Image (cartoon, rainbow, N blue to C red; front, side, top):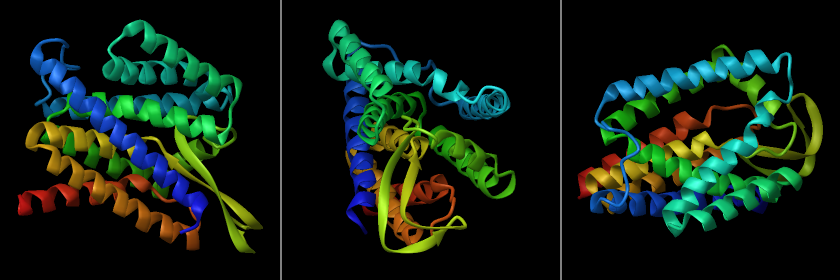
Length: 274
């Protein structure tokens, strides 16, 4: 696999390691009474369906509004970066004023100097914070249900309704923290998406990294670190196989079903071994 694609995997690994650290740190704060749980009842499967339908609703709103206002989805990106990165910094550093300064600085850097570097770093920090909180919001079974619901939706949205492809085309118009990106240079020009070119930019949605991370955090809370590590190992292996396939067959594919299978397989293997 070429170095430029490998860069995405490096950011994925960093995001998930940071997210697991943040999630475990926050879990210990909750146990000690120094912090409150993100939700009152993480064991409720109803929460999985509630959040799933909320995501569907917001996706529909974004698609409709974006038809009339192309920059709509980018208008609230700074807020999301600030919120998610602040959550991460506040959990890890536990000094609110410093967390605010770091989150504001990261948000300004990404907004003022948009690039692949600022995009991937802001995605890493934001994804780590979001994954940690989502993982602590669900017990393992509701988290698995939530992951399966979104994986099914991802397949429908890419292969049947194809509106996820439309959303992706909108997002890749400029560097955005909703995904990781890296350019891949082929040795000889080839036909990609109907055009002959030598360089193709690969993108991986942030949700495809955050959701397996959330599952790993939930698994750690339920069973311990070994299960969480096996979960993210499974995610990494599935991503390597997916990128290897896409390098030779560049086409829009739903990544979440692949990483979900890999992550869940890791948990199953951990259960069998330990």
